[in-house]
Image (cartoon, rainbow, N blue to C red; front, top):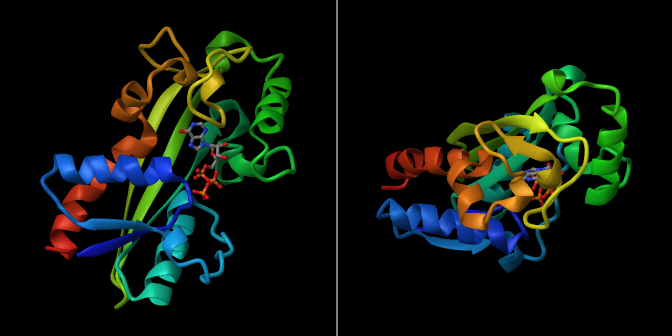
Length: 199
Ligand code: ITT
């Protein structure tokens, strides 16, 4: 079966492909890039799961293929879960990782070590053209540093130090991060769902 993944990020396609292959599943994965005429959906949901489902349904309807979509972000305890679904545009400019991270660090500058708990969250949704849907979630818990460290990864990786680690996510190799990350966990949780719905 062909599966379409609602992202233009080749890293996500590679990661899901490896996870499905490890599980003995041989679905052909195509990125949304293969269908350039499909308009981007508005992420109007208020949770990661709602946004992932919105994206997956839109893509399944437009292509007639089973579609996988994910939505993710950083949730800071002391900020009541913010930036959350607004993580990619926290500073006002969508996708400006540096500005987003700098603003968050400034907002937390007076917050002491013991109150800097946060987690990355990822919801991964599978939607079929007939409207069937499933959504799963994964989290990576940690503490926010006062200054960025490391150059791997993207987004808030340089400031999140996973629980039990001495390094930030940006100091982990991609393999080390995938093994513990919110997205890795969500994608691995999707394996039995793919097995169930797309035997
Ligand atoms: P899509 O086109 O796939 O939607 P996006 O950047 O808008 O890409 P993501 O779901 O990839 O949406 O991530 C949302 C934001 O959350 C992202 O811009 C980062 O700021 C943050 N984020 C999510 N996962 C992260 C991770 O693994 N490491 C660091 N930051 C992450």
